[in-house]
Image (cartoon, rainbow, N blue to C red; front, side):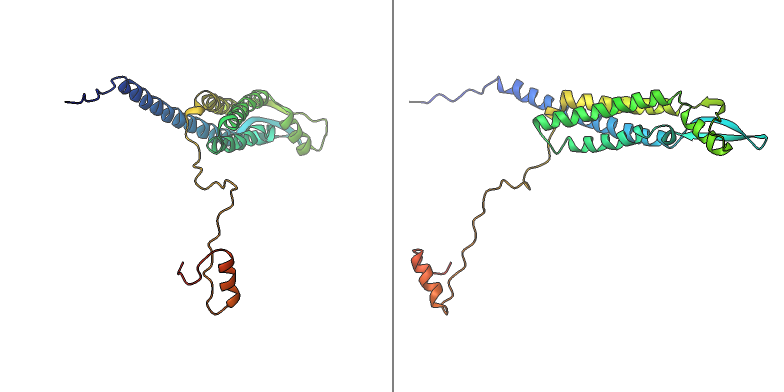
Length: 218
């Protein structure tokens, strides 16, 4: 009597292919989010250190040139770039709801950079303050005001960080998380019993009370 051999399940192949495709898509989206977030943060920090506006003020009968860096206009882009970097790293340390919250923080950091940079693109308050300081006249205002393109570079940086946050919100559930092998579960660990000392009678009696044979080696 012969036994029928099990036939291979043909439906397993499409499932395996779909699983490989999902893993590949998760890795690609992860790499894209890392690239977008890191590039956006670096660009925002760079833009904050560049000149956003130029002008002049009258000092001792002559024109005194004035320059306002991004950090003089607003400190928001640089601060939110650091927050975005921290959120990008934290995405891998949390799971489920925590990952969603951190991804939302990453996206909001990008939005904040965009708004702050757009507001600073036409700002004159920073140069007015410099004009008042240089001239010694609190009512002095900057003359010949002009703006550079660096505020819009900061806007682009915010868009990159926003894209990274949205990608984390949409595809973050498929990304790997930090390994839990080093996490403590709070369960008490068994303590290794010390072999009774034959020269200490009290150790021998305690071992006998525990139901152990003190003559047996551990």
